[in-house]
Length: 294
Length: 227
Image (spheres, chains in turn cyan, purple):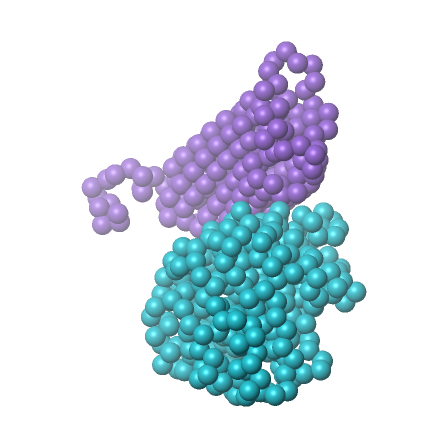
């Protein structure tokens, strides 16, 4: 099953409430995905060039901090539950190399100029509380509640998946050709950390964007290359996009007002949003890419 | 009588509405704050009027018998699924599988219905004032469906004996669905549907009729290669 949600704020005055809106949406989608939850919040970083979202797994925070600051001196390191947000001017190539070589026990869940990603196993209500999502601010965010089907209930198997700078993807559905596609993408240099189908779709999108295709064209070509059923919400630095496969078994509903655009698997996810009963409410048509902010 | 889903549990509201009986004088109810919850007003069986103010989730007014249910907003998947009799009126849009497997009664959708509207319908009458998405009336067996707007891809795919009437454009017809002649008896059916759903601006001859070519569901040895 799984529940997916997204909210993009048109009115900047609401940015302080983004976390509150998104956490309500995730809580309301607990029934569709009680196994794990995750979310990405986009907030432009002004002081540093990059932000890195890290899941410590079983590593102790102080041990991590000690090891990390040995190699990177100038960084702001903040712990939130079992995640760490590192803000620094160091470029991704360098940080990725350090993590791959010296900090193999931790997982980098996302990085970019604006994105912060948090994900964990457990009931969505508990997960959003642990990460204190209600207090987070930002311009847009997407989230996922997971009912595991084709791979195990682990943090690695939780969404959102990020396979490129400021990119992330949440998915309701399942893909049938992900093993083959993973092999093909690995040959092209993509790296995958799990056996999960959505991670392959995220890698597919990153690979296409790297080749200078637009997000819209990327998702349209995905309709041909990704075999299965899905509703995708994909986040970028500036906004997000939604697409459903052409059979459209997987639900999605959009509510748009002058202040925001909200997307969710079911209307009940957004019943708490301001003025939602007067919003323009519609279902995205199958095989059509809808984008905001991109 | 107002029933507030913010104060009462869904099960309390449904159980109350499912057990009105024939003797009680109070026969008109309003459900407020539906907030997209599922299965609101499922399984009603008495002659009562219920108005749901707002948007509902899945299976709203499912399995309905005798009751008249009006929803002022949009409905999620499977509104009036398996309805037996009575009337369900959606003032907004309907999500996929509206009226799925319904045996009887009347389902009116003022807005659009998305994919698979009337899937496997078994005798219900469905009126959609807007357009329908893909695979409308998929495997439909009996009843009538009247569409005032357009129909999406694969209309009436693998259809049995449902009559489909469309005023607008049909993107494509599904397997074994063909356009058929609109005869007087069909016009009378359309007239009735228009009247019962309060539509005055169209006349029966505005609609085209579609139905089964009857080549797929009757086994014929000549068609063996098609199966």
